[in-house]
Length: 463
Image (cartoon, rainbow, N blue to C red; front, side, top):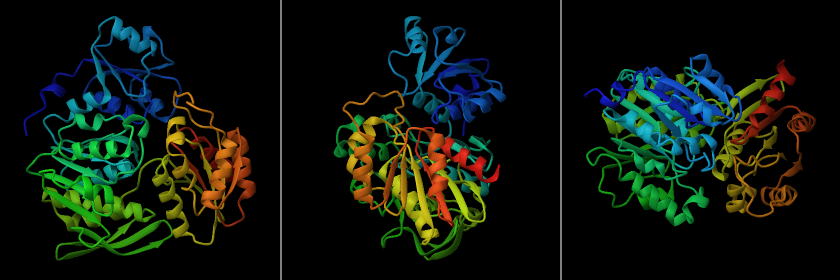
């Protein structure tokens, strides 16, 4: 594989990232630093990602101002950055080179055998699993994903091999900017309707994504998903399927869950491999199967891959255990759409059928709550109590009046649970502890800053 001339030419370049702390931006910034680039960036909030980047040598600015971009060679932005952002406006006025984050990632992947992972949910965990499995198979991959891998406490893996694992973000259509050797697809749900306009348009975009793959290598996709079965027909690429249904070419049978661990048998043609996965839930079995299917599609050792699952440590904010006492466990998860939320609650309910489950949830974006209102209201089945915090706007304004009290009432009816509406994270922490009849599980769920409640709970429980 020839060296990437783009990455060779990056040394001594300065990239400025607008919104550097975001899940899709921080990993790119860190990988740019690994390549020898000078990195600066701005964000409105200080968080773990910005603290890490600063410790590695990045220059981090609090807030956005035109002066922050001075001296930069290229400006990197994401779709989350509004058109009136002062740094973006200044860069356009000065005719500075602008790169969407997807363009920078595509540049990084040039010259590598890239493997992209797309899907409405499960991308980060699946990409991390693929990275871990390929590492254990000895191919030393590069990876840039949307969450910190607990294997190395980073959202990147700076390997020296020829494989490059990356998430392909469907939310803004930018996953069509890549040219992967192998395209993996985990699921398709009714999300991002504010961007696509209809579910048919969502499915059409995923079909186009599958067709970005190498015609000789093709795609890996989940056979359990009805929409994937539909869009993966007639794509003119080899298709390797995985799932729990008959017909899956990489199939899981005999799935058993015990606490935070799951075991299953992976059936690959005539071979059977007993797998031990230190994660909860059927959805994580599917994520692991995707990793095994990727290995199968690449012609690597599936037995070795199956054995590697046991040593996977997980991803930050993906059913991450924050605190555990003799009678209370606290988990935190990034889940922010109905499928993800239901998967989290179902996994915990399966692991501890008789324990009380209290969920602290912060809806993410007004547009998501408005376009998926009924699905969101019905996604908390299995929880005993749901504490609702105000919507994390992520820069949006409500397009219509969204009453959290009305949503709580509809959620209670649709999900058969008790609901509580609070405006304050400290009060949510206090109420979650008051509601917990021991033994109990507390879940903090959302893509905003609801994780702060989880950290408050950890402080209260274990100091």
